[in-house]
Image (cartoon, rainbow over all chains, first blue to last red; front, side):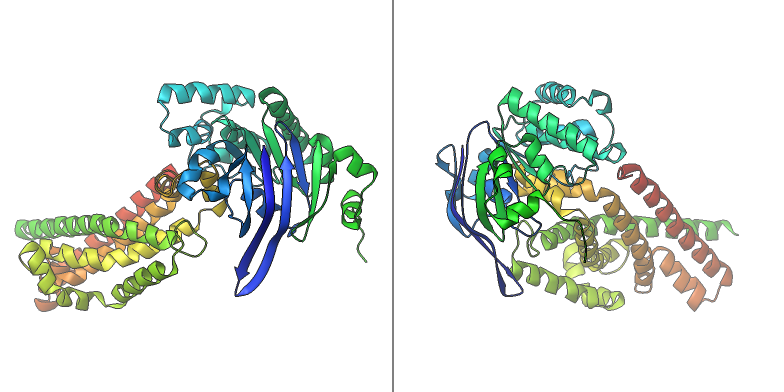
Length: 248
Length: 218
């Protein structure tokens, strides 16, 4: 479904070269829930953004269902981006639009007829169980509700892939659980492939089938979630598994 | 107050309002696209392009540094070519619009900078084109701030138009100058002041109300 080959990404900040990703290769299967875990600054956010080319890699190729999307221009990418939904840590909803209009947003971009949009949005509102908030503005919603609206928006154009960028990091444990179970349900019922990046081990453990550990721009370990928990190979993975909150 | 004075002040008020609002309209007509261009061509933005950004910023800064009273005189040949005369209300609208447009461009750029980058990124991830992002994300999200900028611009233009009165632009500025300063009629001068203050308060009040009405951030 998703294949990354030898991805490198170099940033220049004040003429200093920063290598955000080093020779990253990954294969993610159709219908999988795949986790990428790492500390902040490890390059995981950059990595997830290369999948829909919000960040273009400096070198390397990305294949979606055997189509090499790294060869396309931004304009040619638009139909591919529509097949990849994305949700974010800070939700990124339009503050000036109602819940309904936020979910409808990706559909209005394609010029879908209004009646059809309304039908689709209402379906999604009942999927996320927020039909009664349809005409409210995001400012009046709780964090968990905002993320559910963001999920509905990401699903509006029937994507094959859902990218989650620290989607639960701004939420409390209870809300995190409800968002994760919604993601799991979406994966099961709609067969959508989910790529989830996080620094929270418990998130990976709760829903990911496989997981890659990233550190300083390199994938240092990839394994089935249970296997990773039982015998982690690298010291960084061990540290992520057993975080020590003590300060000297 | 004699009837003649009353109608004189009414006519002046109307001219000031007409000048302020029509040059406000034209300055946004010019300044809004310029401000959007300044924003989009900044580093790491959608159309990041250092040379375009610097060129636009250069001209914006030049026009912002010309004192308005000098801009009016300097632009006379251009104004005459455009509206056929360099005296009166229609003639004043030309330098007023050109003078305020770069100011508007900077205000618009600042309004757009307040939008969290993540919202633009989310729109890109949904396959929005740059034009769709401008129309459906940037302008609606910045609307409350843009309305505040419009009030600020209109109030600045009330002041500018009064300055233009000194060179034949008409309006309250002209009356204040002619009857107040040249003729030393304290009553007319004070009436002009009161009317100008009322106009500024009115614009601020309506602007604040409108801005609050379209703001759904809290």
